[in-house]
Image (cartoon, rainbow, N blue to C red; front, side, top):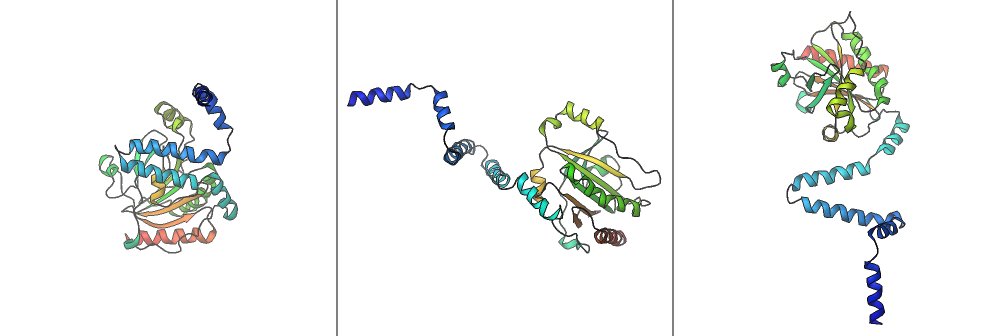
Length: 267
């Protein structure tokens, strides 16, 4: 009996790794998940001695992204068409307004900027940029939200086109790592369509691009659904004083213009 057991053990240990791997692939998915988690945990535990906080942050991120994905965004989009909430009806008081997170963007000519353009912005000192009293910042994470952005920015430009103390930024996020590589990024900026300038308007809209990962940026301003558009009205200190979502309704456009006028008077 002992001899038989020893022969059996020798046969199992002699199996190639490929055979063992193939056998695990035939297992059911639920049975493989604990093993995968165990392997991931072992890998994380190995490196947490060097940077424990970074590992904990990455774990939290993986958990967020596993619980939230494209299908969750699509389900919500079908329910409300991108209108995840109504726009603010009034200006958010300065004392309770939060600062818009710093965001590195690139213009189509390759020039780099950091939003928001505020009193403390480095670009103001280095590039002699004027600090706008009010900035309209529109965020688009997917092509599906471009028309939503235009429903806000177009009437804004039409109403305040003669003002020099405002700025409009339409930010498109490009999170594909390959497109962020220097040579490809440069080529992409060349072929991207530049915004048409309105010669009769003093206020010009700037179309800019944000390359790379934007998880932490989104988390700071609580952006979840990537299929809709996000609109922010910022004061000269870079604080969020008004916010809109999705496609603008006539009433919401009126509220945006009214709040902008109020901010211009207060600053």
